[in-house]
Image (tube, rainbow, N blue to C red):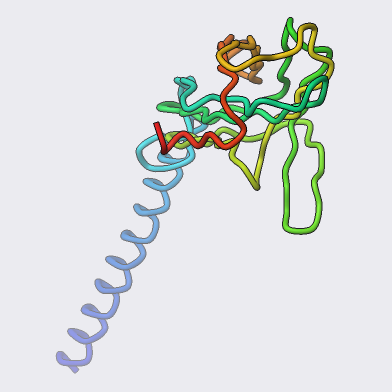
Length: 168
């Protein structure tokens, strides 16, 4: 009988230890889930820290529309690009290309500690209604408006049609 009681005690103690571990782990997970954090290190929380690199516009045909390319780098929390405008153009729209189509999009996510890349064959800007015909070396101001971070203005150079940032 004493062996049976010892067995029940060990099983009860083991069950209690497992239950305490599970409940304790749940409390830890619940604590990690508070405060709007998206991960254990809070990668999704806090303000976005945005910068723009590798911006360029290939020289468009005379009087034509142009594509714009750039990279928005983010060393902080998640944000979203919601609008792009320019004082030097009638309209700037965001587009996403697939192998078979191109569609206009209203906004694009800028991931926490990541980048939003506008590149040939993928996501890009379409610039229409230039106030002055662009020439090589000109710069067009683009105003990028983000949901959380406000507006960032960048000067984007007009490059030759075949320009690629990795060539510079």
